[in-house]
Each structure stands twice: as structure tokens, then as C-alpha cells.
Image 1 (cartoon, rainbow, N blue to C red):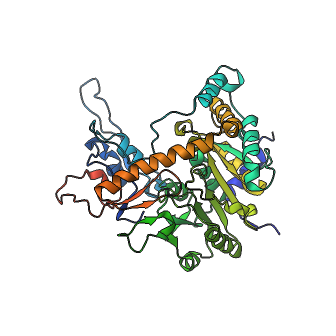
Image 2: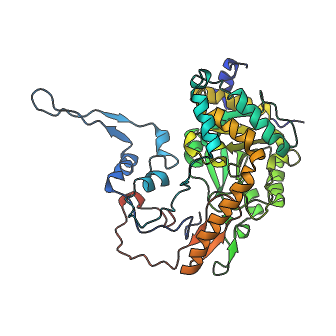
Image 3: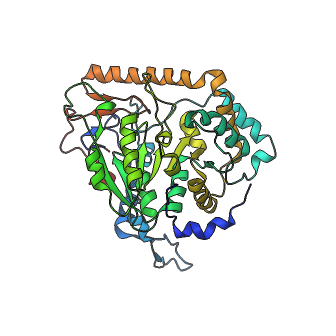
Length: 428
């Protein structure tokens, strides 16, 4: 029997119109004591007042009229939406020439040449410069089917089980639009990717936090395997209002690759309480040391209740292209498509073609194997320097993040931290 999962009413109304066709003592990176310009304090003030004030110009008499004020939507007071995110802070930081910014997952190398050439070729066509179907361009959906069907133990249906999105983040947002009712609870494992929170609260969902507990003895060498979920704690977090559990494997920022027995325990609870699962697997091609990447959608009874999230940006080092995808049963993908059509309508066309070329040629070129080798080398070089300066870290088995224990780093008590990080833990 298929699970009965309630749609958000906003999605029911719109479906018919669709066209057919961190724990606080830890950092995820070690960064020089370089922060941000004071001009970034704008968002902090806005979040407190929840009104905006335009900057009027003097009239013909040289008098500056009183600026109009407008009330900001109440949703902007949720999910830390008005606080600066890590990208906004570090991108604007005035880093010295000898400072390496490790504060973000920012690649300093381009996509593969053959993927870039596919983008150029698509720009030279007529259709590549016009709207695509909201589901995604047929070539990319077919490439996703051909690449991923083997990993899901089924032949994916390009019309009903694959949705191309404007980045993985937007695809997740569309799913929350489609499925969350006011008051619905969504379980997040802490630490979590920061965009989850406002995406949930903007859609009137209520985040419920379950920690991934750090290793008990941080003085010893640890790995991402040593970060563990207390499954009784997870069970206690489930209430009659719980709608969904968000799983992220490989994990940002721990680098944890969830084992099958861990995912099975999550799956058992999802089935017992009739919950959906959002499985964020954008780093599925970045798993190290021969660790297997297990997909929770493949476990018994889970395909029908799981949306799996993927990303061309993470797969082909093109995060600015904003091309992602969702894979799941028609019952979950259809309403999410309906929501996405009203949010962005479609994803940019030429870069969908390039992402398709990437998936089409990746196996033949041995691309993903080579990429894992290169990332493993980068990881090991970075960790070698942490070893040299005596900083403990948690060895990641996936993604491109490292959690480093900075408890021994001496930060002056009077260090002039900017107002933008006031009230935040030292892990930001």
C-alpha cells in the first residue's frame, strides 16, 4: 500500500495547470583572523526593526522629505533570514594576499573543458536560448535517467520521476512549498546546511533539531564515522505534527557518509510514523576511501516516500550554473513540479545542455573516479598542515568539508569582532 502523504493546499489548487509534456566548539574550516567590512551591518538592523526606509532625494527646494516605511513580511523574521549567511560574510571579507579563505565550499578551478564546450555549443543554438519545459530539458532528464537508474535499481521515468531544478536548493524549496502545511514539523540533523532553515520556515514549517553527536574524546584522532545519531532521541523528536526528515549524505559540514544500518533506522521510523524523507545527496560523487554511498530511497518501503536531491554544480565544479535535480516517485515529484513552475517556471536552458553532456560522457572519460582521486589528494594536503600546527580534526569520508577543533586557538578576549556576528557561536 502506498503511503498517504498530505499535500499543501496551495499545491492542490495549482496542479491542474501543469503542462503535460555544527556543534559550537567546532569549525568547518580554519580561517585567518580576517572578517568583514562594517558596511555589512545593514541586515542586522533590518532584522531588528522589520521595516525598511527608502532613501529619498531632496526636492526642488532642497528639502529631504520624510522617507516612507514599509512593513516587511513576518516570514522574514523566521529562520534567521535577515542574518548574513557565510557566503555574504566571507565573499566580502578583505582577505590579505597571504590568507587562504577556507570559510566556504568555493572551488578555485573551472568545470571540465568538455563540459564548458557543451555550454558554448548550446549557446550557439536557437532552442538553447529559450524557455525549457518546467520538468527540465529532455536531454538532461534522459542523461539523469541513464546515469542514475543503475543506482536506484529501477529505470527512472523521465516524464514523472525526474525534475530539473534551478540548483538543488531551489528544488528543495519547491518541495517544501508543495508539501508543508502551517505547523508541520521537519526534523533536521544538527549541524545542517544553513539554507534548510529559512526554506522551511518561509513555508510555515517548524524545524525540529536532532543532534549528530560529536566524538566523545576530541583529543584523539577521529573520523566522520564517530559522529552519531541517538535514534531514541530521534524517535522522541517525532510528534503527530512531524511531516518530514531531512537526511544529508555525504554530510555538509561533517563529511559523514551514512552507513546502511544508520539509514535503515531512519527508514524504519519514517515508515512507522508515515513520514516523508528529503535525502540531500548532492555530494554523492565525492565519497572517499572506498566508502559506499547508500541511498535511503533504495531501502525497503522508502522509494514511495523519498525525494532524492542531486546537483550538477557539485558533480562538475560549476556551482554558479544553478542546475540540480530531484528524483522520486510521481506522487512526490508531480506536486513539486507544480510548485516549481510557479516559482521559477524553468531552469536556464544552455547550462542544462552542458550538464547533460557532463553526465553523458562522465563514465567514458573516467571523470568521477579521477575527481575522487583529486579531492582525496586535496583533503590529505590540507589535513597534513593541520597535523603540523597541532589542530585536531575529524577525518571526512565524503563532501569537501573538514571540521577542525579550534579550542586551542587563542583568540584575544578584546578582538574586535564585527557586529554582524554578535550573538553567534564561535563556530561561524
